[in-house]
Length: 230
Length: 199
Image (cartoon, each protein chain N blue to C red):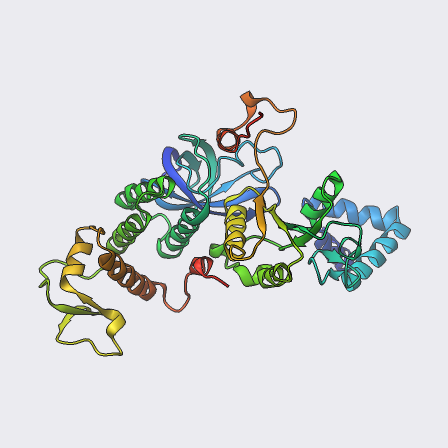
C-alpha cells in the first residue's frame, strides 16, 4: 500500500467522532475502494474541513499512512452542491449503509464508483430514483460476485431464486416460495437495467432485497426503518 | 517512576473528561491534592450529587433534577410552539438567545442508521404522542444542519404529515457579520436556495 495518495476522487460514506476534535471518516474512493481516514481537528468549531467532509459531495482527497488508519492531507469539494433533502436523502443514507456494510476496506471497485456517482446524481436531480437505485444495487452485487446469471432465460419461464443456489426453473410457485419466484422476462429486463415497467421495478426490488439480505446475514439494514410510518 | 495506585486511579479517572490527556490529568490531580483539597471535596460532592439526582424531564427529555423541568412547568410560554432539538446543550443555546417563547423537545441525538440509531432511540413516539394531543400549532425542527440532522428533520416531518400542524425547519446560511467571500460553497449554495423575497 502506498504511503502517500493524492488527488483521489472520493465520497464520504460515514463519519464518526474520533478523540476530542477529530473525525474518523470512511471514504469510498475511485482507486482504493473503502478507506478509513482520520481527519484531524474536523470537530473544532471553526474547522475549514467541517463543511467539506459531508456525505454525497464529490471530493478530491489525499491521505498518508501505511497502516489501516490513514491521515487526511487534503480534501476539497469538486463543486458546491446543496445537501440532498427529503426522500432522496433517505435513499442516500440507505446506499451508504449498504456500502459500509458490504464493502471490504481497501478493496478497489472503480466501476462501482462510477455507478455510485450516477446514483447520487440521480438522487440530486430526482428523475428516476428507483431505477437508479436498482441499477446500482445490481452493480454492487455483481462486484461482490453475488448475482445469479440472468442470461439465456426463457421469457415465459418461472424461476426460483434460492440462497447459494442461483436460479432454478420451476413449473409453479408454491405459497411458501412465491416471494422468491420471478418471471423470465422480468429477469431479462433487470439484466438490461431497463426499469420502465412498474412490474419490473417491483420484481427488481424483490430480487435485490432477497440477494442483499442473503449477504447481510441476520443483521438487517437500519435505514429501511426510515421509510416506515409509525 | 510510577505513581501510587490511588493517585494513578485519580489521573486515569480525570482523563474521561473531553480535552484532558495524560499530562493535563496529571496536573489536575496534583493541583487538587496539593493546593486545593477543599475544592476537590466540593467537586467530588457536586459530581456525586449531579449523577445521582439529574435525570431527564418527563415532558421534554432535557437534563433536569425534577420530574418536569422549569421550562416545561412554566405557564407563561406559548403552548402552540414546539421546538425539536438534538441535545440539551442546543436547548441552552436557543434559550440564551431569548428569542423563542415556546416549549422544547430534546431528541438526544440524530438518526444514524450506520451507527444503529433509529427512531425508537430518539423518543419519537413520545414526541408524536405529544403532537397528537393537539395543543401544538407549529413544530420547529431545529436539528443540526448535518446530513443526519436533516434526515431526522425529514423523518419527523413525514410522521406528522397527517396531523394539522405547521412544520418548519430552521434556516441556514451566512453567519451574522460574515462575509460571503469567506463562506464555504455548501453554505452559500444553501443560503441562495433558501433566499427570501424582501418586497
